[in-house]
Amino acid sequence: MPELSTALRQLRDLGRELGTELRSLALAVDADPFDRARLERSAALDLVRVMATPHRFRPRDVPSRARPYTESCLARTVANLELAHGDAGVLNACAAPGLAGLAVDVLGSREQQELFYRELAEHRLWTFFGMTEPMHGSDATAMSTRLDPDPDTGLRLSGVKRYVANAARGGIGVVFARTGRSALSIRAVLLLRRTSSFRSSTLEMIGLRGACIGEMSFDAVPVGADLLLGSHLPASRRGIWGAGRAFNIMRLQIGAQALGVAFAIRDYVCAERTGWSGHEVVSARLDAARELLYDSSVEVDHHPDDRRAPCVAKVHATALAVEVSRWAESSLGPGGLLAHPLLEKWCRDVYAFEFMDGTSNFLRLAIAADQAPRQGSGRPPQAR
Ligand SMILES: Cc1cc2nc3c(=O)[nH]c(=O)nc-3n(C[C@H](O)[C@H](O)[C@H](O)COP(=O)(O)OP(=O)(O)OC[C@H]3O[C@@H](n4cnc5c(N)ncnc54)[C@H](O)[C@@H]3O)c2cc1C
Image 1 (tube, rainbow, N blue to C red):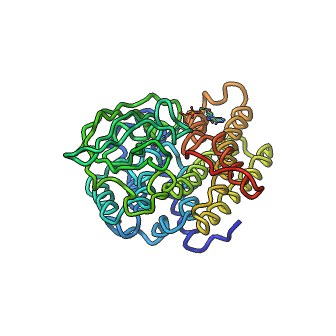
Image 2: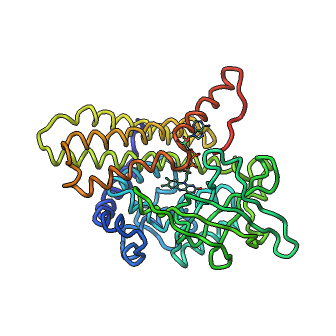
Image 3: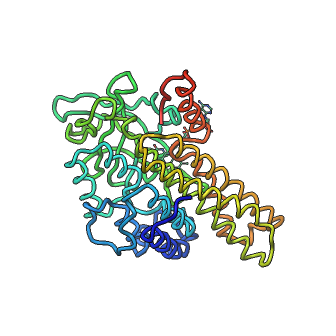
């Protein structure tokens, strides 16, 4: 495991402190994730929002301990694990740049980045990242949402996105759509709710309810050509493949969140059963998974386009989190969760992570495909 620098240890400690406030909101946000006033009152969420904004676009300075957050993948991993140890549901309810921000960082021109972060800072908007469709989840390159040329406005967006976080409340985000038949013709546009007219609705969720996933429906929505991302990049980096760097970072963030919840579950069970040694194997496996996440984050910092390490780490962390939730259920005995609503909530939350940013089956295929060229066969893997 990499030795954490003083700055990263301070960021980790800050994450743990902010997590305490997130946890105090956990059950209330689970019960009503749409209570905007409650989320806006949270000083911890406000700091997370600003520290997750790249340094040059931050609306105000942040405490020195928060500054490294956007400087490396390792910093994001370290902080997300601790914040999710507080509560991942509340963390996902934060009006932060999220995956849309990472995509704009990678695919956006300077002007597009300025627009995105200015809107976020001025209006404290939730963000959305529209990739998944009702009939096309894992196989994102088969998406059917279209971007057609329009003589008046530049482009028109048509199609449906589903399971998108913040779909109904997001004020700005990124939507992927195809401009032609090949996978390379998939492009992304920046969309502002206040200047575009599209329908959106919320889906009922069992776990990680703070993420508020929903559906977005675009019926020939006019989009200015200036909002098409990636036009300044080479053809191979303008769309889905260009966003690969964003996916690599986000996969590790999600793995870190899954592991943060798993640590919280372990700690909760240990607090209930003081002096009990039944957690030792689980604790050793959690420590090892954290090492893997940290190592993989360093790998991404050195090789931002190499997706093997983040895929391996996410598959492992998300599966372990589910295992730990089952261990907790059996450790407390029959009906044990009924007496522990927070634990019960975390045991629901852990199931969501596997699906976010690529399911485990799909990531396993990607890992195998990435190994294939070294063995002298194989072709570039498809989709996310
Ligand atoms: C909390 C949460 C937040 C999300 N946020 C967003 C978001 O902000 N934006 C967004 O665009 N999407 C979002 N998603 C959607 C997520 O990306 C999709 O759920 C995921 O890509 C899988 O797509 P799907 O649900 O259509 O499942 P499918 O692709 O239909 O897969 C169903 C099952 O089949 C398996 N499978 C699929 N293909 C293969 C294959 N070739 N081989 C073996 N097994 C296979 C999968 O592993 C899975 O177990 C979110 C999901 C969740 C749960």
